[in-house]
Image (cartoon, rainbow, N blue to C red; front, side, top):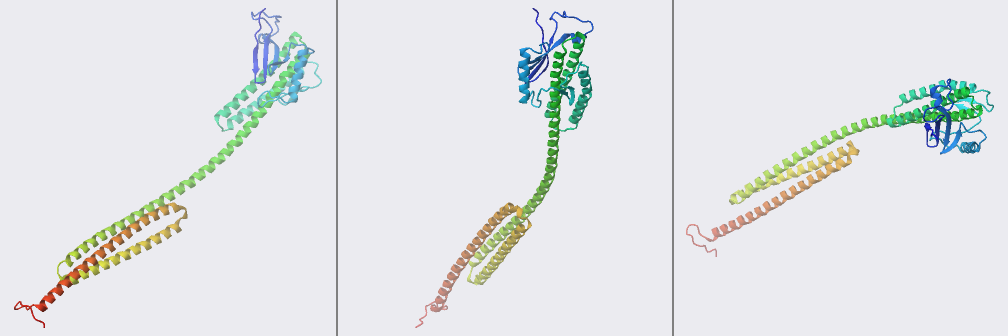
Length: 397
């Protein structure tokens, strides 16, 4: 017995639509008819499966037990709103609707011409819906992956709808030519119409998803505009911070130059102190000159102390001005204050060094003065006790 090949018209997670050939695989038709087109002679049996179970067979008698069980399961599935796909629901009702147009009512028509006319009238609406969806797909600027998925889904829905309508027309033509059972043929038409109705529901769901994606696109555009404005503000703040950093660097360089000047003054002062020490070591007549040098050193120390006070005052004024200028840069001001504190510590070290040098100079001066005084006392005592002319000691008694 020769086998028959089944062709899958449409397949999804929940349902499978098969068309079975009516002739053996050797190519000889079972009941050849000259009036039937070659494309229509191939498939005369239509099978719809739900969840792996036969829901309807066009060659099955209406009153068979399998038909009753499948119909009961389908009605149960329709009452629980079982999904054919993620966005399509299949419901079985007495009236069949294809893309919003009623095809068959509760009272069946006498012929299949009424269904054919209704399906033909539903074609322009399906085309207009597909055209509108394609135009909307072109206007939406969203991630390409989601748009491609929607386009693929729409193509599958369109193919399923067109395939169902074409098979309905083929079944009607085959029924008119071969005088098949009108009731069984009408039930097949209703089943395929239910699939077309599910396709229309999928189209509506796809339109809704496209609208949601459009809303997300508009929201993303608004966020992008807001981000651009924030970026402009951030660039302005960066430029302002850069200018203030340059100002702080210039002020730090000026402070460094002042420190170098103080160092030079300190070296000069040390040289002058050394010169004063040399003058102190000569003779007692140079004592006054040494005292003048000490006075000059004190005056220089006083001037240096005044300069230190001025620098401290300038530092305080600068800190106050920096705080009033911008409170937002407290960290940078703290860093500068640390540098100024380091400068003050260096100044204090310099002051302590100068004070130590001054103390040593005063100590050396006191020693020299005491030495000279002792020498003068010795000379005076010698002068008082020895006669210069004779060289003999005088008797003061």
